[in-house]
Image (cartoon, rainbow, N blue to C red; front, side, top):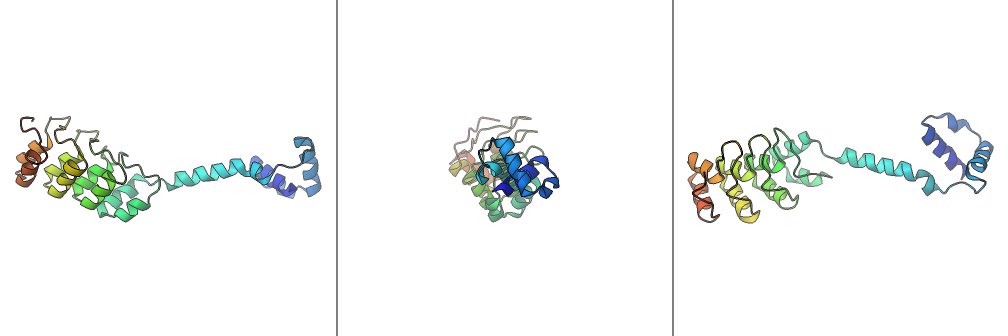
Length: 195
């Protein structure tokens, strides 16, 4: 039990000099420091160290933005699911969220995972111009992604960008994406009078 004190003192001091302390000296230290009440239990001595190790593991398990970006570009849903402490609303490149990048790439499986299981905010816009995932999907003529975001994920079909006020319906019409225009104006009930 007294060797536990040595380990504790070594961790406290941060050097290995305490490893050379003899057991009899450890008994004396225990008696002076702890009033002769005996050594602390192992759980009491290592509690702080265990918590530090757990915290360090949690921090090391947080995925890096580049790892998230690469998994989305590759369409690797399995890799995204394996990432611990994954924040689906984190801003990656140029203020873009993972859902925005997945919608831009037209990867429906990743969009479904992020909006569904990962609970990404489907209406979170980019920080630079206010484009939403639905807006970029409508601009790029990704009808399946538009259907999922507007229909199942309940994205706001009338949310305009902050730089010029364009809605997903407007940008789809401007780019001659007629299937997206039909869906947004018909089934999604987008406001046709909004710019």
